[in-house]
Image (tube, rainbow, N blue to C red; front, side, top):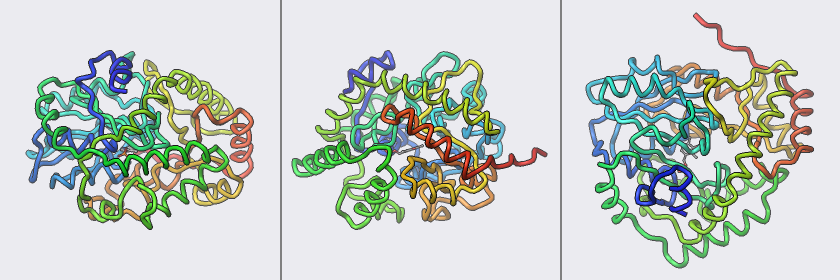
Length: 384
Ligand SMILES: *Cc1c(COP(=O)(O)O)cnc(C)c1O
């Protein structure tokens, strides 16, 4: 899997590290950069709680920068506001697969001597001015979770661009725990179960069931209860399991088909949505987007999600709150409502549509018809 991943990014496999989750890759790189208690990092206020939680396990303070509502990515003009003497790194996320505005971001980071880490959990194959997302920062992390660009049945990949970090990362990786025989069997069973029952029509149902089962401790969920409560779970720094490596390898081999499907489906949505009066996805004209989930601002998000589930439509919600998911104690990670008004608004309004290769044309048209019938575009926030 390392080889396939490395060849996609035209790099060598010694620059790739395979972990149990994407967030563990982030944790490892923060550690390798020697960022520690008292230091600060800037992250977008529109992300998964597992991002600030990885930092919190190293007692690093997160400051939240607001997003550009048109790209859902960090707004470069917000960065100065959050810069302090203690700022060490900036996490740039390419939300929904839309490349972040890297030129101003890198200029800012360079001027202020800040390390850039890319959160590529939504972006595999997207390019900013011709260059692949994931190749700009010191390092970038990817997720192999079920709903991410390609699945390894949970899992995380760290791509290191800054060679001087390799020595530290090799020793951190050596400290990571391996997966036991039993745990590997359990993960394998989960992969088989998931691959056999999840279709666009069952996706929402299965996701809810899966969240419930992991809450009560039956499946290995995305986030443990301890993690949600802000404590580092035992065995957090863990390697990818052999069965996950195999699954990831299989899915990476077929990645081109997935990337093509995502592009085609994105075009279909754009045409239909523009006709219905929605904004199409905005990005730098020289960027190439592989959209993971197609974001749409709607006026009645809660109702739309409820009706979509009832109609068995695979309509999702990222992010439910500026630190996803709903129910996260955001204050525990230093986020308060109003800190990032555009992120607050996007969390209240944005639903997302599937672009993956298992979604059929018929299903896409069902989704479009549904939107036509049940919702309308949300209004943009007035500019001042
Ligand atoms: C999914 C996701 C993560 C975390 O990935 P895991 O593999 O679940 O740790 C981090 N950032 C973003 C933006 C994500 O969507």
